[in-house]
Length: 158
Image (cartoon, rainbow, N blue to C red; front, side, top):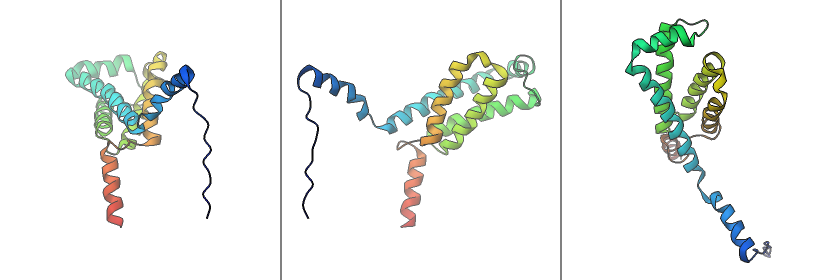
């Protein structure tokens, strides 16, 4: 068997070559670090939101009754549901445990906020949804309990 010769494009020398290498440096960042950053960032947003709701529950109920004005659901039910979804989703994402489920839950929260509560804040909601979609479509990454559980499950099959 003969080896196939490797043909590589010659590296440009000088300033052009240096610029190209610098521009390509971010490609060396492990994707799992990007996934971790996305999970922690969006978990923080929803954790803080839930904590502010819990800090003054009577005000939260009043907001759900008057300002948020969700259709088809009573404010006394909507407030605890939203708070529970934010806490649960934030914890799942932070730990990277059932992270896709957590991302899906929080995408539901973002959708309700966008459609019924603050449609004018679409840019912020799009940012949140982008981070959540990253986790939903690509998973939690290596730095997660999902990854550990997958490795344990894979090892027990063999």
